[in-house]
Length: 368
Image (tube, rainbow, N blue to C red):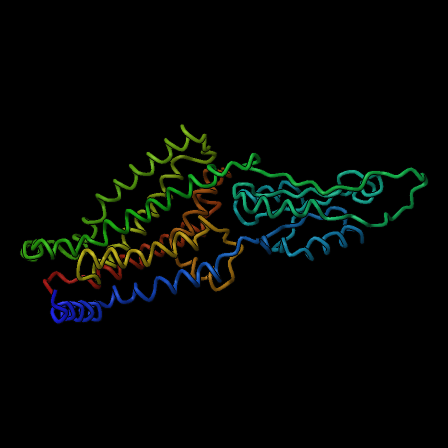
């Protein structure tokens, strides 16, 4: 073995890496990204769950109870409600994760040791459900407004937690709808990110240049076949989820497919934008990884969204998977419809329009 020749090959490889900015970015960027995401953005200790409170008693005792519940840091009030039905509607629309009901006869229940508060929880997320159960362990040590005449000790008053949509806490019910988004994000972005690059590498770009096909027609023509593939993948996951794990579809099946189509188009348009920037198929797949890693970690699929710090949540709002997870879980698990979840599908529509516009503008029907 010649050490001189070996050293020459090493130097050549290092120079190639230095010129390959995408690979260089992965060498440095991936460890830094993972360290920041796992060490800073991901937090399994949920706090400040968005909560609505229906205080029908409006007494000093009920107000003190609310203050003590807020002091735990588990819940954070975002609005008030007048009735339990109003709380249920908010849970179904995904506006809140927890609803607190204090009945009108709060003082009587407190004096007799009955159930004094009912906590309604969106159990479609098992982590949120576990965090809310902590409220049931709060001690109730209030003095009733009217003193008791009997000296017989009564059982302590209780806070009950009622979980909706997944009371058995079956993890598959929460995971399977999210898997639709994960698989569509991984496959759709990867497929289209190599679309334009593949034409260049195979020498087909000359043929496209000679045709009257416009930039918009070429880009949309690349997208539509993969859209059909995405819908087939969605159908397969839904079918297996129902047969193997008994995952329910409480909302409209049409709404499920409309939501899936929005995510498919968002990912395809993002993949096309990547393909206009990449110089090779391998480079396109490298750039796809920078999209997929934050999506799976910040969207709320693996780790609870409410446990992330504000900057991480702001970043997650840019990702289409974040909005799709809210859509698909709301429709399949809570029975919501698209009109209830309009901010989420509107965000996806805006994302699609922006990505497609940028991809068409960046694309040039040339070999350069």
